[in-house]
Amino acid sequence: MNIKSQLVKIEAINYFVKGKKVYTDPHYIEVQKKDQAEKATRTKRTDVINYLLSLKQEQTCYLEIGVRNPADNFNHIEATQKYSVDPGLAFKLNPVDFKMTSDAFFDKLAKNEVLSKDTKFDVIFIDGLHLAEQVDKDIINALNYLKEDGFVVLHDCNPPSEWHAREAHSYKHTPAGPQWNGTTWKAFFKWRCNPSVNSCCINSDWGVGVVSKKAALGKSIPQTNPFFEFYLLDQHRKEHLNLVDFEMFKQLVKATNS
Image (cartoon, rainbow, N blue to C red; front, side, top):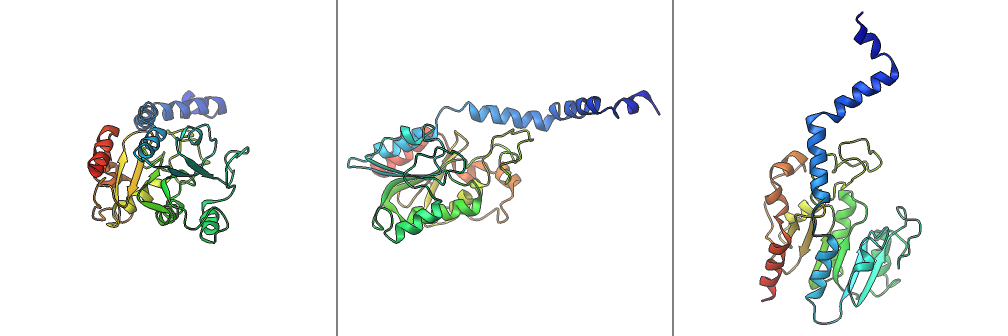
């Protein structure tokens, strides 16, 4: 048996050899580059939300689902009335208006147990549990309480790699590190294929998806990825998500209002 095969049996050396293979792997390096590029994007979800609220001449009503630390986004939102929903699993202080899940909030809202069942919002921001089934529920509920000219905004709709789009948030030993977009993109893509709404995704801040009943953001598309395969999303991001930059997004919105 040669010296090399003997050396790799030593635990510390084995860790070094395997670790080096990981860190120098071309795929690992490529994913890290994509991760850093996304972190460097300038337009943030806060910018998009505040822009949409600024279009309203009258008083505005805003709802945020999935707040975590309100200093990240909620505190910076400029609305006449704004409400927050979060069960507090990711941020123990949880200084929100409604300390519950989004399902519980919408159920209570329908029963007149919180706010009023007649409440309508100008913008509803969804950034809660990043799994497609829950995001889809949140979109359905949000549309039921959205003004006709309102907007549903979603975070994490454009994961740069399959590692960012993993289902297990707790597993962090990936090229994406702890960054997690989950499977939000699947729910957003499902609604991209729904002719009852218009939608687009701003290509910044991990993908800021916007859904509207009225604004001409982008017509629905045929379902060309029925099993929600990530490799198909990766090949057809522009069409699947209707990717636009922030300036193009503002032009689409202005064209609707003109």
